[in-house]
Length: 245
Image 1 (tube, rainbow, N blue to C red):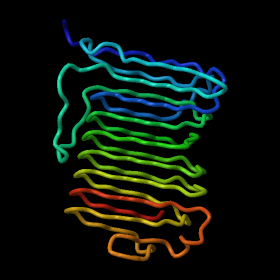
Image 2 (spheres, rainbow, N blue to C red; image 1 turned 60 degrees about the horizontal axis):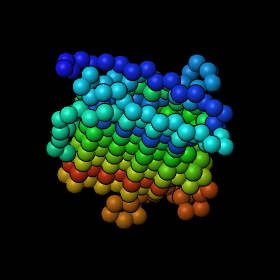
Image 3 (cartoon, one colour; image 1 turned 90 degrees about the vertical axis):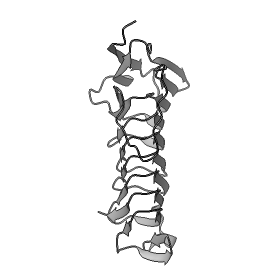
Image 4 (cartoon, rainbow, N blue to C red; image 1 turned 135 degrees about the vertical axis):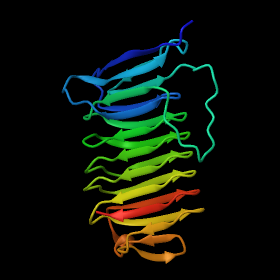
């Protein structure tokens, strides 16, 4: 059987959902998630590439009492996908998924080794867990989010996370790479405590943060701030940078 690269169209109805749990595993592919811009009453649209021998991606959607659960899984490529942590790589194909920005979403996103790009600006996000075996991880979080719990991890690529303006409540961010650089951007005026470390690289933390111990920095108003974020930023071998603005 030929192993041609094919494309499957994703089109999932809203069915009145106001909240959703979205679990996506793109296999060895690159994964891009952003907002649906057409205004149509859909939960998700997209294009999912796959190899002929791999078979169609599997999907399931259930809805109950305005709560949707969407699961997408790539088929087996039929060969192992192993990368050393320092060997960042590009995926074998592309998944592009657009989610309804008006639905409060809890997102889990995984790639075995491809790049993961999550542009969540303008979306309603309650929780994010994203990881890739060796690709780069780029995350833009929405403005005016509240009480976010975010994890962005890669085995060997770079991690970049931009926290949205006007973020409120108590928020947590874990940004981690086995070997690549880790970069976190904190918006002006947001109180933060930063735990920054690297096994072999440099640690660069904005001078507006005060060092409280060997690996911990925080803004002067953190302890009494109503709106704040606690950040863990770590790389096994790359540089770690946390900046304001």
